Length: 305
Image 1 (cartoon, rainbow, N blue to C red):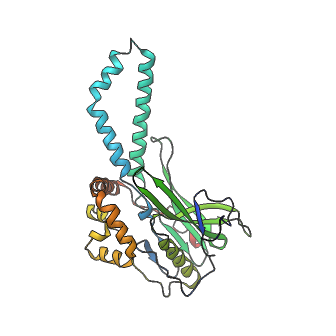
Image 2: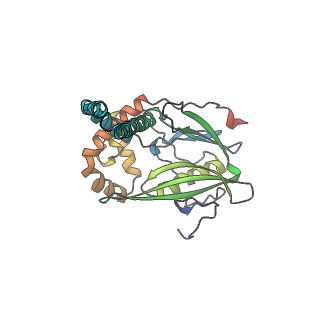
Image 3: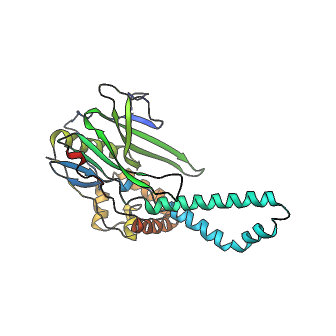
């Protein structure tokens, strides 16, 4: 990273690096989208964003909270009924707080279970249209949450990388995201942004994904390596995606082949000691994926205009 500020305005709050222009295609590029390829032909490229969608934690935490509330239901009921005459104001505040907490739990669980399994993005080479599926949660968990289509124009597109840093007191975490931004024609003023890939440990993977998109839109599918994403859902796949070093399937060997030795060492040192945490998390992710609806394009002909 050489620049201290993005060329795009307004700058993303998590901006880390501007990526090469959409028309740039170098012979030293290593175009690769890993397991995120859903479709590739001369008409359009479709990329999955399933690997960027973290789920399972909401079901795990929300379900645990509901079990805790249910186990203490007798005690909570006594607080709400027996003490109401002695401290009506405090009882009302406690009751309203409990109700708000239950609504928050429902919101978290619904987001895990109702978000589609994938929200793919399509790049139409002939028309230059980019169509993405976006899930729009509302603050009201009892309202209908909808999937909408967003459209971007390739001819006014730029890409950037975001960096998010977190520290829990014990673990220092850094994650990178690939963001594509549509600008107003002839300017660097951003009209809209979408996240193409998130929660990536090593930025080189995002450079390769953006190179894949650029090479496809410039030269077509010729010379691009194809390795489509597995669509199956299983508990073992949910668990082993956190542990490629322990995945001895064909899919696991292919993942290890593409990972740098630094990534494998990081996985072994950081993730294996946390196996006890990822085991229930993976199970909840498996349940959430089983319940989640399949992605559907409301208007599949939109990018062909």
